[in-house]
Length: 429
Image 1 (cartoon, helix red, strand yellow):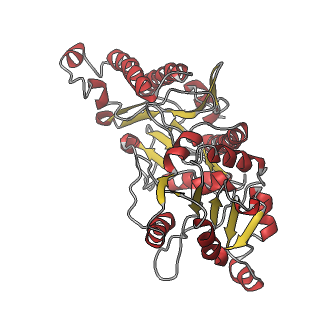
Image 2 (image 1 turned 90 degrees about the vertical axis):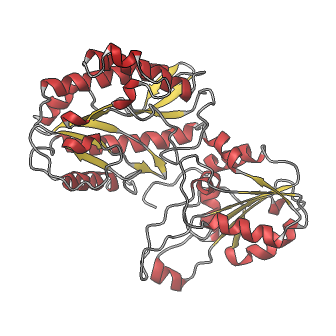
Image 3 (image 1 turned 45 degrees about the vertical axis):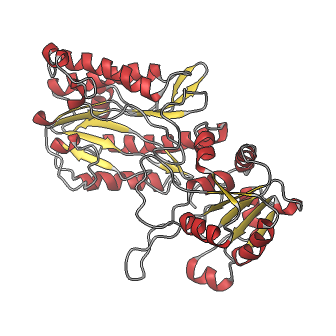
């Protein structure tokens, strides 16, 4: 891990909140992610299961968290299993947690090697009635490989068929939607690193630069600030590709007069940030480009004001759609007749603004949380309206990360330049 050590109080408090949601006499188990293979003997970089990290702070493969708050033996109420390390493992694969280090990171006193899991688990299953198992129930998830959690679900139900099995996912969705101060501080740090990367680009982007060169500048700045890198696949899209919502090739040359859409952000300590900006490759917006840019910026500002306690994502999207419609009318991209004959299920503005305004953000870029749940203090959302005018090869999206407080929304990216004139000035210094 590149990031500074996190106070284990964060994970201790997270476990306390989780345990309160369990039925009496229940065991709950969370597994680390697998290291995913590529081909031959290659593998991808390890990324921890975010539920496992949320509850333990352990950022290492082959780890299991077991919680049994009603266990007769106090040592069995929180148990962490980690892979047994050795001098030989350290030589080949580097340092792994010692028991002492795993305890310090997690705040869990009982640490065992992974090889002891089945024996201890068998003993505890004779004492419990319910078993909470973890699955990925994110509404956007498309899981085509069998995860470590999924293998454990199958094994557990086969070996212990008479227990009552319950889902931990609904509890995690409820808990993780509200961020503690410590979590907000980690998201702020990810936003701060993102700002450094973006400011680095303002003096770098010019006609003739390749999108992958811009990607290289960003990864350099992110990693040198203790980030693992991008919080998600970077979108660095110039010209027509600024209209492609999930463009990730990043292999075109930026041309004079192009708009460059940048949906790029850093992670820090597994916490994500999410930012989008649009830059004029030539250093100055054209008149039409600036008009569209400022229209999107007005929509964004109005949308941020709607990120307040009591609202919901469903209501927010409907309200922002109305605001976007007015801006599209002013730009003459829509006519009154288009709105009069529109299908309410597919309003006319969707031709130019086809995605939602906001999503939860935290340990996952699209973090856990319900679309119908009223906004509460401590939730963090993106705010990202956009206009995509394919016939003009012009796509503008502007996105910041917003914290909901009882006193109104707080922009965690308020220091990142967004005004068209400020961006032009910084690009031409």
